[in-house]
Length: 209
Image 1 (cartoon, rainbow, N blue to C red):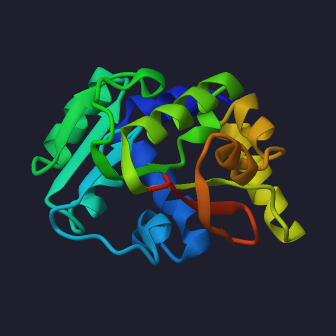
Image 2 (image 1 turned 180 degrees about the vertical axis):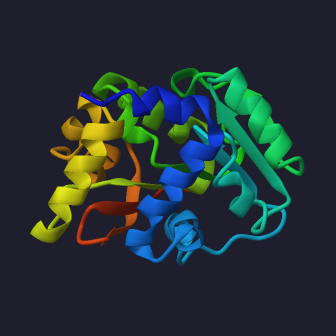
């Protein structure tokens, strides 16, 4: 699946950002999309936040408005270089999300935005385990990603987007109950909300005290 537009969107940041902004219109624009997974959370300025699979820092730019200690992690050296330029007030680390070069129990919030659908099932499980490891007891894992639409009117747009830009892992994730997966790994689900006709899901899960 996916077309020639997928590699181009990763090569050219202006194209990726443009696609993201158009997609975000389904929930009221990019600002609202980037803040969806943070709704209802109480964060202090000294909170330690990890932006997992941060890409070029599109969401990191919003996270630095919540706290002074924001770290972005991504496997791509090109993305890390762009992120450092885009969000100089954050710290960035290159590394695999499945094996983070980060210490145990070091973050109050681990956040990931529209990245988990890119992963194979075993990768995703490994990433969730790592998120659990690097969270402090009582810390929160917050994610926003695709979900099987509950409103049939949203199916054509999602299917077209997947066909143009995504791979089979995106389709596979639509059939998963991520709340159940996270619960089985030890997380306590605090919040699970659907947006954009059910085509987007927000999950907030806590590491027990």
